[in-house]
Image (cartoon, rainbow over the protein chains, first blue to last red):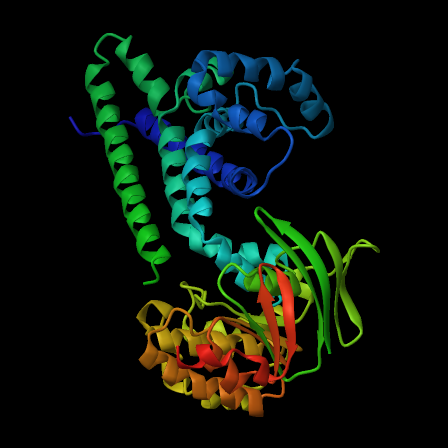
Length: 231
Length: 226
């Protein structure tokens, strides 16, 4: 039963690609937002916080539909991007990456924010007295000390992106080889007669990926603790 | 020369302090809650005065009337904190090198070995701060501040978190520093005996105000034994 067919491999490969790209693009943005939320007071902070968490509490179908309205071919942003930069999201794997990135964003930001908050501000002050400008303090003190949290956030975000279903299928549909990820492939297979063995294979694969991610994130979290206590 | 003339309101405490010192070691002396730490935090640029002027050797660092404020990283003022504050993710060598790197000062092996020799920390270079004793940590913090080539060194009760034995261990290094490093210092303490050994000029603080200014002879004799 463990002969994975080419179509299934395509779905697995696509899922990994979508999740990897989503995570890599979302991480720098996530670090910036996490730092803002952890370290700065500004007008509209509560709004930004709510906005980041919105994909977590909104029905994924709603997020997907909003993405379609915004980034679809005739969407406000989508039309402009297609006309001026030639970037198209709708019904492409890049659109799946966008949907996954947005759905994963709150999970990615949270551990990073917590680990930045846990960095002792007195160390940042000490760095300042030694001549480090604020951006140098961030790069040489804050970020290295928050690094395990960043990695944990990336792992969680990646796991979420791999499993994302509702927003992706709403926004970019379920096209084999282009937008059919593991989740949407399972969904299709369950609705096909005799699809169960194939569906089960993909279920096992997605459980394996999820478990690996959880174990990795736990490991990073422990390392973060040790690191903050100085060895 | 260090000139301070500031006021700052911090909750219950109202700091109204004014003094000018030429001393090699200016001692800020007073009980806890007198505003000593807040005062040197203002000199360091970590805290902004509500009103007033802070200047070193004629260069203005803070002048609220002119709305000028030199940010902390451009002041070239070293700071040794009571709690050392070494970077836990860097080893001792990297901690010592941090200020030089941030200020883009060229590497100077002679200066590095002079400072590590002065403080006897040459054997600790590959260790992480987590594996240092309290006294070793404080010596590394001193070295780190010195190697950033400050024009003024602030020491906020650097012996405060150490037991008596450790204090005796560090004090000679501070005296050597005073006599050999050639960097003016501001030394904060509530311990008159410590002050007497180190400071060349004393600023006495009480509830945020300067109550006396002069040589070590103005220190309370009764406290000396404590």
